[in-house]
Length: 332
Image (tube, rainbow, N blue to C red; front, top):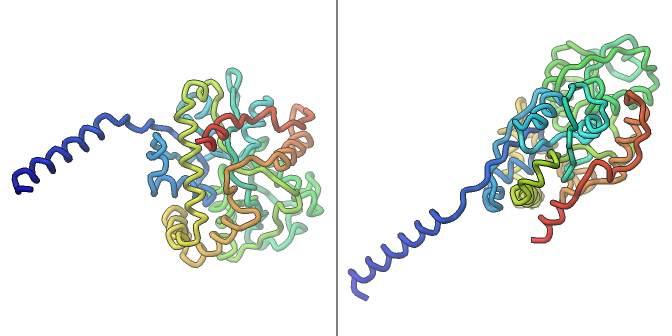
């Protein structure tokens, strides 16, 4: 082959590749909102590794200061997808949320995430549940999220509801900073924030293991949006599941720990190793297949039945979930 012919063939190949790229549809942008924390490892990995783009979507990730801001943003269409603990979406579907929505929330949970990683942590000088009598405890919102889990754990710790005061203080990162600053006497923190608090001398008073199975983070959308964007939602789920599979690969541990350090304020390499062991534990870690946990959802519903107002008896997880898009993602 002559040099001239080789150069001509090479130029043709370059032009063909450029044409193929031009004809490929651009990834569908998705506005995703979540709380800031290590439970987002699957999303961070999928973004870093290009798994979302490989499945036809691009993710614009935003962090919310509170559940009310997350829910209203999803309802108003400022976000397409929300990732938060399932009780938030159950609460609003049942008319028990703090923020007032003008119509049917139309929320549906489409994917699981984790079991919560919940720990009750005391503020400066608080060493036991008994020390909480007469103290102030912080929650994200008074009637949604993890407030009922905290109230139940405090009660099981032997402290009456009348002996403490609950105040709203926003999402986990905000409550962590307020706790360290001594603004409140205890709160419920999620990994890695209980580890960060322990490094500052604060005491973990208990964990949510006593509650049994518990459904923490889930992915939710408005059903009307999902019906109009089925391919994009399926692509998001595929990309996220690929991210979770990647973080569980032992060969990727060093990079996963680096993601924790890069994305978490106050995180150190040593704490990242400990966080990794909890977040990716064989039992109780981030859900490998992003499956929902029916028994964990029943625990959430039981707590809402006990503490939610107006009082309702809630028992059926199927009322709040739709695994249509999970099945579509897995069928590929």
